[in-house]
Length: 144
Image 1 (spheres, rainbow, N blue to C red):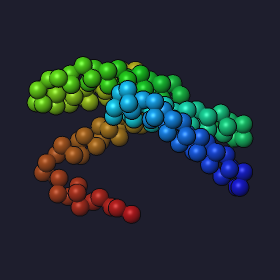
Image 2 (image 1 turned 45 degrees about the vertical axis):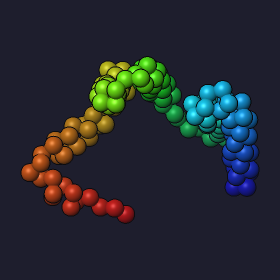
Image 3 (image 1 turned 90 degrees about the horizontal axis):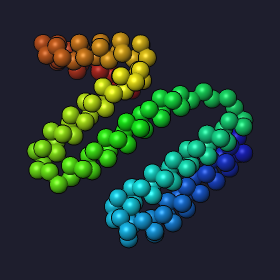
């Protein structure tokens, strides 16, 4: 137990140091985008490091293909969203809403979802689009 705490602490502290150093470099150059980039780089580095460390001690099956698909689509849509920053607010909201819907559509096209997930999504859609049952559906939500 102590050993795993030590490993996780080392990774977290190293990620914080990487983030701090990248902030010093990137914030003067890129502003808030630099802060976001430095945080993303530090978190990705920590995740990869932990992935390999855990692999030495235990077998955990990650669906890396799905993670990569999701990241590729998200990065592409993020780049598109940067291109529309100068648009009118209403157009930005419309385009970004379309991108949000397309994000899940592209995941569907790339066979990201398993059959059970698609069944649950269909069931949720049917349940929550029936406005006559909306009040009953809300009352059935249990928060524990």
